[in-house]
Image (tube, rainbow, N blue to C red):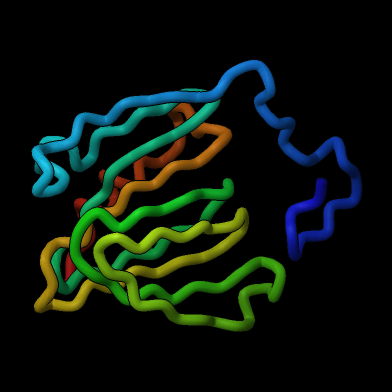
Length: 149
């Protein structure tokens, strides 16, 4: 199977799917009101799957390049998203406005920049990627927490 929009010269370069188990993890959530502050920055990280909850402060902006496919869910707040894909050599930038409850898929090779309006609540994002990125890779939640205006 080829990923849409990418030319891969040989099939042996495509990650092999995990066929012997369904990866499962647990990150404790707060009461129905949303994500607790203690959950932000927690990371479930194995070779099969990485799940983390990250937060951006109001007025902050953050850039990230994706080395795997990921699924994102907006737990709280809003942000403006500017993105580009490797399939266009990052020559076309597109925009999305994200609000609580939105989810989206980010393909391998994408570049994203989130910008949180100064009047918004903190922006909390749940991300899930497979395969996982075991220790040794940079921690996005830690970098997002350090992002300033």
